[in-house]
Length: 483
Image (tube, rainbow, N blue to C red; front, side, top):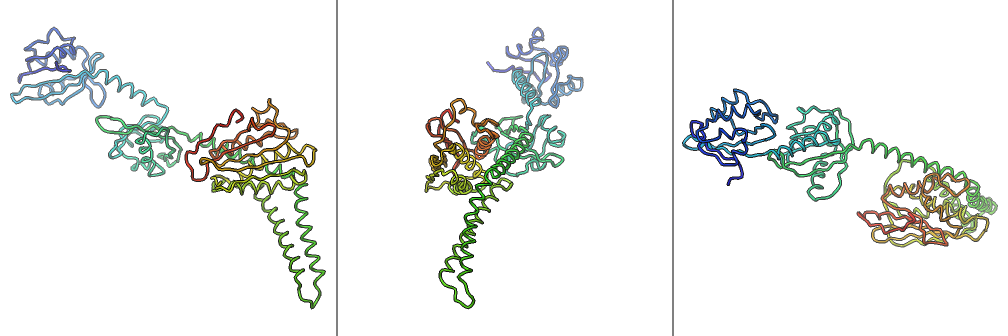
């Protein structure tokens, strides 16, 4: 009833007895398998049938030396192959010199191992196996060696620390922790190649048993090219945003001159009036002091306008920091104030008192708000002076910072609504069609969402959400079909 082939050999290597499964496993020699059969005769029949012994993981001929070793009972437990069968042989020597042999059919196991090894070697990703306890590398595939520039002999038996493999020494532990938690998805990791080059990978791992040991199977996908493309795209997007800001400033030059002339004219008037009141030997009176204070205020006002424009137009490297959305709204509306005033457009700021800090680049967030504000101003400034109204709202809800801008312009034609965020699509005669695509790119790069609200008619309303600073995993509400 044993689940494997069992045979008892006496001290002279003659068969004493065996079970039926042993006969089935060696069906090519069934007619000679009977009590009294000499082990050497069975081995010779095996050899004639193509018996091969597995050495160093590879099948090899069962040669005369192996036969002699077996006859001397010094051959350890082995795996053999003949035909399509793979058999594992284990022997137990008894006190009287006889031998009890156990033959286990491992054909299916070997087929599974072969399939695994083929997949392992042919995988287009880097695959490696290392021990749980000491992180010793047991095997790597060819793609792993080719990508990192190693030979197999330089890797097997060593650890990632020995090879200085990870740029971050804690990276491997982070990958393992994620696997043990059952968290889906990989971890961004930077490998250091043999020649010192640093490359980006997404790596995941799975606990497995390999060669009788508890191990981890690591799969790493090289994303260096994708990272470069993403970085180039980001730079291109930022360049476009900068061009848009500069071009917009050119369009607004007249209104900016008007805005700056007011504090400068006031400054001149206050200073000239003060000079006229001052006579040699007279004490400085309160009117002169008040006039000079007002002159200082107007100078500061002009300076702030200039500084705000310079910061907005300047081309700087993006930087992530905590940004108050209300502050970003005020900065953008201050830049647009002159154009809104010239068009006699009513601006309503409905800003929440809640904490509306997000993590992002302040200039890029201002860019988004400015673009949306400029679009609203253009939409309502259609010649009906005094009829325009633009409302800006901020709020915080469930870990999200919300912003919307609404105007009472002509609205967006139904046929155009689905194309608003497509590059180069524009409803303006002189528009480039880049403003809204840039807005979407900026907001999505900060893990946010932006869309046009279809149900805001007869008004035109754009809205975006960003995760509040310090909030992880904030859920975005449904935003209809207008996204």
